[in-house]
Amino acid sequence: MQHWQHSSYEPYLPLTEKSNPITRDIDRASPKEIVELLQKCDAEIFERTSQGNPMYQTLNSSSVVQTIVDVSKRVEVILKDPEDSLIVLSGCGTSGRVAFLLATSLNRWLASHHQKQIYSYIIAGGDKALLTSQETPEDDPLLGALTLGKACAGKKHVLFVGISCGLSAPFVAGQLDFCLRNLEIFTPVLLGFNPVDMARTEPIQDCSFHFKEVAERMNEMQKQQKAYVLNPAVGPEAISGSSRMKGGSATKIILETILLAGHEAAYCKKAVTFNGILHSLNMFEKVHQITYSQTKELAALVQKAAISLRTKGHVYYLGWQTLGIIGIIDASECIPTFGAGFEDIRGFVSNGFSEMNNKEGDLSSLGPHFIVDHKDFVDSILPNLSDNDTVIFLYSENDDLNEVSVLANNVRQHTSNLHAIAHELKGLSDPERTRSQFMTVLTIRWPSSLYKHSPVLMKQYWELSTKWCLNAISTGAHVLIGKVYMNYMIDLRVTNSKLYRRAIHILQRFTGSTQAQCETALLRAIYDVEELSDEMSSTDVTQHTLVANKRGSVVPITLVMLQSRCTIAEAKSYLDAYSVIRDAVAACQRLL
Ligand code: S6P
Image (cartoon, rainbow, N blue to C red; front, side, top):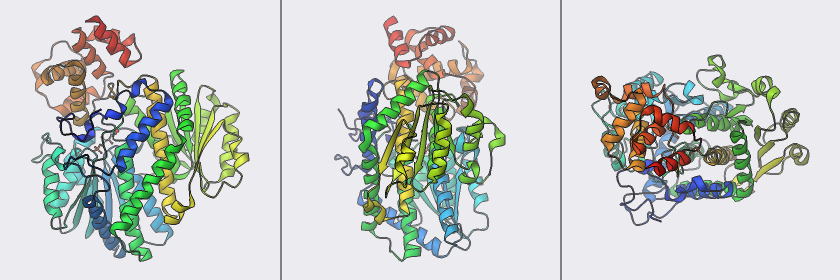
């Protein structure tokens, strides 16, 4: 099997869009195999060797560790002099959700230690995007810059972290450009997982720069320590391009390492050192090993979730504190990632929006997608719950176990299909009573060595561990019900320019047609016409994505059209006959 680091491996794609050789046949794997494949993929985050390709630096490369040290020291400076200062974390989609999670957690920590709250987050599309997919603002560099300018009004020192796993989001490019033009106030940091050479070069509408140009300017400024680029290679995603998985996890690992090192330096007089950072990164690797040491138990949950989805049941995550938020995020990402219905997998958190602590407050009046409190679950979902549904509790020994028991008891009146993922350090106070209420409990036991390293970090470790488990459950379940073809999510929604390009690439990959043929066929499916008008052909990508947003299954339809040279109507009826994309494609190929 060729390693993705070889320069000849899918050379036309940036690393974050390549397909991972490890998961090539994930769509044929058993639940246990799926978990094992995901484990291997996630282990690449910590890979030390660069397989002889100097293009890639990894998380443990000295240049990366040194940049982490430098940025941590900037955090320390801001924490020691918080007046008129701000640390802003910003991104689109999952990157913005990780920014939100970290900024709110650390502000809470600062408040509890009577310190000024200096963190702020920006997510493209605003707080709505925490719970639903808002892919269109990702393409707007001006909106990014304006939002940043507003968030920092009146501040004299701003450490800005722009997260774009693919070094691709125009929203983030606009913000970095804004910082580079105002270096007397801003110290910009670019966090992502492609080498700068692979940053996106596609022209941005109404904009004089593209992402790569901004990344190169950042690189230049790094020489004078006025800007920083943090872009280790962590390998392609298990499902091609799905940066909610490794991208999100690696973002969390790197930012937590930086911010907590800065905190320890500012408040515990523990200087930021190269070895200290290396040690922190090693601890996260332990979190990976501990989490995935329970392959069998995790696979059983993947299987349960898949059975529920297959039988038109649902999967519900009921979590406490930030573990509940991790559940909400994982669930909401299934809609754009797998074209899932919003009822399919849902997350709820104890105390709803007051636990979320997001900038725009309670969003529940915006509609059913924004109902997140356990109380809402009890009122609106519980009465209709059945054994078809899988319910997974997410808690740790820091939570109110009595509350966990009461809710579990309540749920058990409606379904026996009740499970838990529980984080245990010293031993839960009444484990047997709590455990006996669940059909299965995946207990993750944390060794005291990790706790001693950093008691503050335990919460972060549990969050990451829960994220890995839930990513495995939701991805594995959708793979098992046939939503994925090899390791490509074919039925993607073409709602921004990145996804438009990804769709064309997937079509080329599977049909062997040229880029122009694929684009024309895709546009026919988007506009639902056999012949494109001149206006349709000449309009810009943004307009295409706005129309595509209203249509379902445009990529599978295009695939069948290209494969069998049929009309749109024929392609649609053909697809209706198959629920598993691979079957539809295989049958389509048999026709030829
Ligand atoms: C990916 C997720 C997307 C991305 C978003 C930002 O699984 O569905 O919402 O997070 O497109 O990507 P990036 O590369 O700028 O971090």
